[in-house]
Length: 252
Figure 1 (cartoon, rainbow, N blue to C red):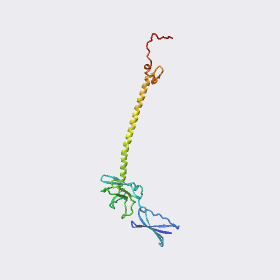
Figure 2 (spheres, helix red, strand yellow):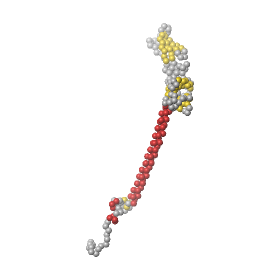
Figure 3 (cartoon, one colour):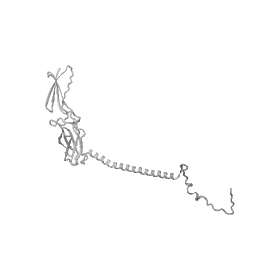
Figure 4 (cartoon, rainbow, N blue to C red):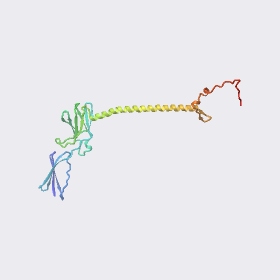
């Protein structure tokens, strides 16, 4: 059996026809080289054009850029993201990206421009406004066949700073407090160890000197006496006086 498969590109306004032969009642045919984010009308007809069946399909668009982030400068911000070519084989850097901005306070969406780079400069932002930025593969043919947008909220607190930058600043402030405290604790512990070591050395030297002063070379050891026997024997012993003539003397 012969079939005709017609593929109409509803965006580019082009047609392609493929002829398919099959001996089975079920036919499988793969249509290749469809563009991401495209719109197509597929028609399958019998070879004699007597019967046909059709359907409309939309292909999956290019995915959103990864790692979209904001860096705040003095009078502007910079949007950064990873190249789509790293994960999308159908994307060419020459196609580029387009950037949109939504001001929630004014309820206005603006097209900022396009670029083939992986960054974009945004100026003239108003303090106190909340902005949402989107970056996507550049749309083709009258705003169609676009990539999925990556969205990032900026200035959600109305302070003129990126929320991610605020969290980073808070972490930096905490680190600025914790690090000096830890340093002081380490210095205090170090001084404490030095003082304990010096006292230990002083006590060790005092004991060594004391032991050496009581060392007997004849006995080969140090001799110590209790505090009750030191220095007070002569004071506590009764004084011996001369003998009286009327006191008998016994001589052994």
